[in-house]
Image (cartoon, rainbow, N blue to C red; front, side, top):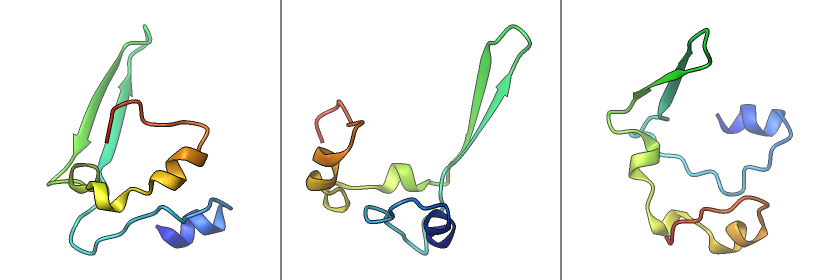
Length: 71
């Protein structure tokens, strides 16, 4: 994943990896009327295993989008 991100020109400075935890997959089914159903593959997924020590407040402060929930 890191190589693909770098190849796309995206800064990977905040990317965390773990050989035992997989990236969560999200699948979206969009109906003709625009309604959507979401399915997730987690066992558990990386989004569930992320912890405070892996999040850089300095990086968050420099982003254009920030998490609104207190970490």
